[in-house]
Amino acid sequence: MIKLHHLENSRSVRILWVLEELGIEYELKTYKRLPSGLAPPELKAVDPLGHAPILEDDGHTVAESGAIIEYLVEKYGGGKYTNSDDAFWKHYIEGSLMPFCVFKLVLSKGIESIPWYLRSVLAVVPRAILSQWVDPNLNNAVEIVDKQLKGKQGWAVGGDVDGNPTIADFMLGFTIDVLAFGGRLEHVGEGIKSYAERLQSYPSYKKAIEKSGNYRYKASL
Image (cartoon, rainbow, N blue to C red; front, side, top):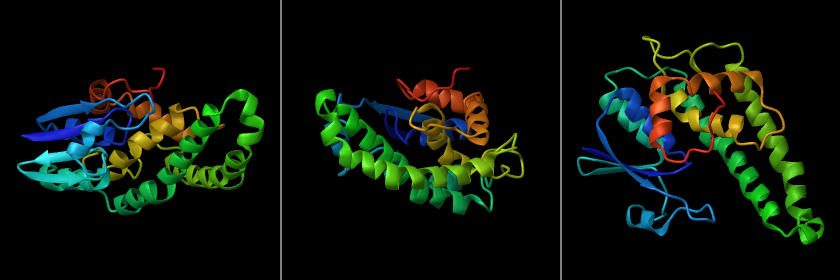
């Protein structure tokens, strides 16, 4: 049986969605984050870096969410859940969008952790990095996603021939939740907001969220 090592509020929600969408039987091992927000040390027994998701399938171990999604779709998808435009979005999401989401989160959390009476001095550099580099790049990256989703009533690249979500959606889901409901963006475009709300109403995604633990990026539905 497949076993998924899942970290709460992480990209491994993507894999939960794929497993639920494909109707695959699996065992779920959930790890809670430490008060610091870091992954617990127990994950290092599974992965040397202590990262999730990690998928085990018949003695075969797969790491990295993009690789796991491709593995599951190829092995269990029956030729469905793919679109010719998936490749670009798979790499764009992880290569151009998620790094700036992470930079924004880390720097913002760092500023918030500084005592208020020292913040005006110690936060000068991280605030400058945010305003001059992270925010402009993040906003540009987000705008491209919003334009792709704006006006759509379905999946990010149109779905597969049967109207199912594809790899682009599986990769995009968690990132969209962070953008729409993470509270780190001053403005969320209508394309992203509409897609995020539709996604969290979609049956297999709702199941994935329910099983994922204390999920913090929920729509107010």
